Length: 214
Ligand code: CO
Image (cartoon, rainbow, N blue to C red; front, side, top):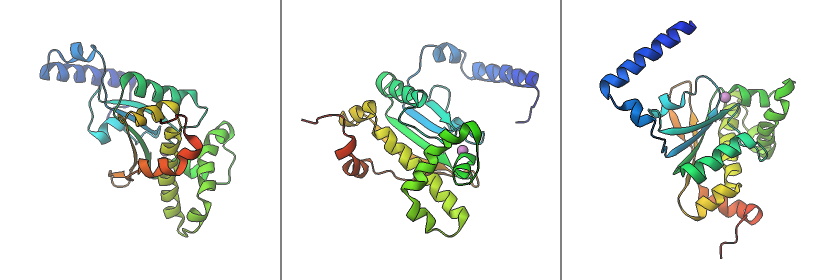
């Protein structure tokens, strides 16, 4: 950010307002009418994961939830409320879980350390490590193991999303897609992990299915 002072932020805001109005005098009038984003983006709070910038999106394009390590715990009312509202009311067509390499949350979850208040939060990522311990420990290079845990965490959070009632219902109605992405902060590239929702459902729905399909 070229500006660091608070007053500069407000100056920048006024310049942006002027630019938008020059392009379209009705821009804010239309923006105020409502939102109809097609994407729900669940990402990490990391300041480098600038959702709109990396998606080339505009205000109104993406419904966003971000937390440390882009996790969706089964009892986290915050992320679950965002998903429920996005799926049932906004009726987004896509849910994206986007992790990122060099994620401090994932790194902390790979480390023997007491993170205080963050311990229970990071444990969701430690649980992902435990689930995939054999695969991860087989990777000798620690940097590569770190990258792999970032990817596996994204996939596990997508699976957590599939376990929820609202998402299962929307999937049954064939009006929702789920995507696993990683943002590579080292190159700027967005990577699609090509989540296979059908395959995952085949593997887990005998346990997590909430609806009788008949
Ligand atoms: Co992060």
